[in-house]
Image (cartoon, rainbow, N blue to C red; front, side, top):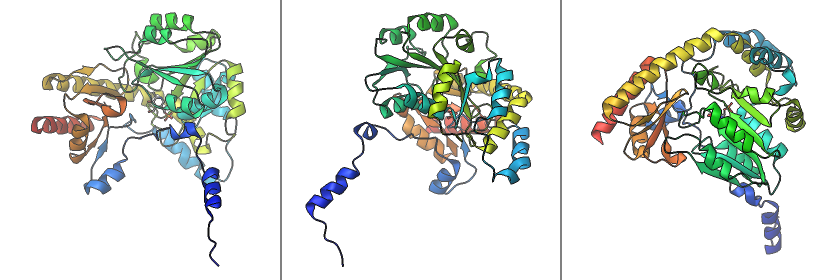
Length: 380
Ligand SMILES: Cc1ncc(COP(=O)(O)O)c(C=O)c1O
């Protein structure tokens, strides 16, 4: 017999599924559109994705071989301590292995930092526009997140961020190079800023694009602050230059007492077996990294030249993506580029409605993008 719900029962059910107020304020992450989705929607093939700052050269062949070699071992749980990968990173970075915490992407470390350290009443500070996951970590943990606009050159305004510091500040995020703008802060500016941050706050320096910026003499050394015992966490990832975005491997380097706290929070097996094995192999293949940096430098030069020819303002980048002003509605330019088979990122999600962010790809991808852009801008 069908049960007739009384109003009281309906109210009780609603009450039981009421979402916490802070969760209602979370905006779901909008990833770059996957190629298969765009091909399905538009009924075309041969689409290229220059939307998520992945490595167009793909992963190191050595990382692929590691997975082939161990595929038959996937019935075994991974090493919960990621011993080998932490040791490889420790040697590579010249830091103690107990200062490294691995995560299911550096997203995972951002999440862990929030869950572990933020309490109601704490405040978070970040630059804007920048990577969106910091604010999500703050909201998730009921901490207000102050978005401090970048300077007019799209650089983190560390003086303005310092003005927002107070006794409630618990976390400050500095994205270096910044996503989506590709800009960096200088070592002196970083130094001055760190000196002003209260002792109860963590400074998180997100270096997801570190390997692209590292060859530049004006790029700062953030690991130095970890070695000196500061409240600094440096985030890096295997998703970008190492080409392992699909496997999800990121890490943070921090004082071992901070690392211990994150280990208390993290899932025991937050780094899967294939991720651990392929990251060890990828790290050992620095030739692949060098090759990627060379491809990126050549691609950047092609982009700059073309933007100058088209009379478009762009921001010189320290990453593998370029932030430029289309001078049109970038959502419309984005759609037109999609129809030409190129996926990019619109600036509207970053509060800059005429800007686009495009990943530097292989030479043929870059040419396809530039031809599509010329066509789009001349016809709109
Ligand atoms: C600045 C920045 N930080 C962190 C991430 C997250 O990377 P992961 O794939 O390691 O989670 C990204 C990815 O786009 C990023 O741009």
